[in-house]
Structure formats: C-alpha cells, structure tokens
Length: 244
Image (cartoon, rainbow, N blue to C red; front, side):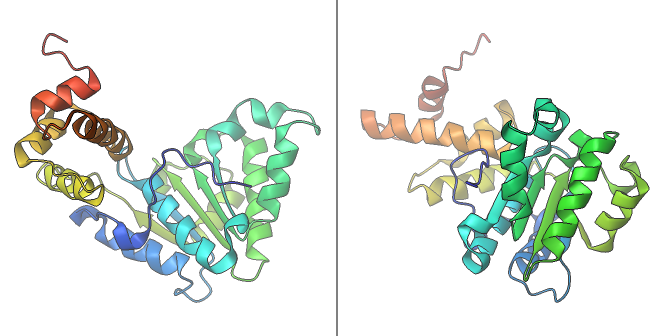
C-alpha cells in the first residue's frame, strides 16, 4: 500500500532539521529504523501537537523502505480506525487496509490517541503488532500526543507498547523556529531573510508541515514574479491581511 503520509516532503534523516528538544528522539528513531537497536521491534513517540512526530514517522518509513522495500512500509492515521473505516463490512476499505498492514514489515501508526478507549480498534492494533513482530526485520512504530501515564488502552495493549522503545518529542523552541525556517527554505533553494522567518514564526501556526506549505507558496510567487522573498511577498502569497 502506498504511504499515505500528509504532505509531499521527502523527510529523510540526512536532511532532517533537529531541534535541541528532539535530538534524543531523533537518534532513537534513526537507529530504530536502521535496525541498529538489536531486538527492539517497537517504538512509540509521544509529545504535544506540532512537535514533529509525523515527520519522525516519515523519516523512519523512508529509512525502513531502503531496507525492507517501499511496498512493505505502511502508514495509517488511527483516526480512520476510530471512525467509519472500522465499521465497514468485509468488502469495504478496512479489508484492504488489513491486508496491507498484515503484510507490512514497517508499520507506522499516527495519532494513536484516536483509538483510546476503543477496544475494537485496540484489538486490531494488538493483532497488527504481533503480525509485524513475527516478520524478519519487522518494525512497529506509533506516535501519540499522550504520555504513557495517560494512555487509556487495554492493559494488554499498554504492556505490548511499553515492551519496546519509548521516545519523547518536544516542541521547537521560540528561539529555534526562525532558524529552522531559514534552513528549511535553504533546502528548497530559497533565501528566506531572518526578518521574514521571524515574522512567519510570530504570525503563523507552529506546525512545521503547514509552515512548509507556506514556504512552497512563497517560493512559487517569488519565482513567478522575479521578486525577492520579503514580508510583503509572504503576505501576498498566503493572502494575509493586517486587518485579519
């Protein structure tokens, strides 16, 4: 099954922008996906919204795909398991998901908190965990906003998840975000002035995925108009009004 990650970024560890708060989580994820952690076959990343958890899942999937093959890497947003997909009959999309997930050798589950308190979804995750564990070089990775003490999964799933590695991802600091935006823009071959990076950090969401989308729009407008990147150009690119 094709990886259905949000966004179009090619999040490889080699190009990752690592905040100070996430250096330990970054290294754990890199070693886990590279099969450098011996018998560790599961990893749960927890942290607040906009802390880069999905980016880390994407980077792990890219790394794992180099080892187990792209078709063996599968991603699922757990919001689907908590919603209508779990209720569909055997001829619906759930059967398609199950078949792909059961054959996965790298399985990434995002927003694990969405199935908290849902025993049917928890049973499915427990089954998938055991399936991937049985495979050579099998790896199960998950991300959630909740720290382990807040998990409301059945005890048998909690135990499974805590058997493996657990890593904490923190939000990018206020002093780091402008610098990270400048580096992100440089990776797109775009020069983002520090003042413009500061404006973006102060006026828009801290979600790096959304900020990347903004930079894409800014870059497109800059290239098509032949204008240098500036705060006025950024406002024009995103339709920002000072009166809003």
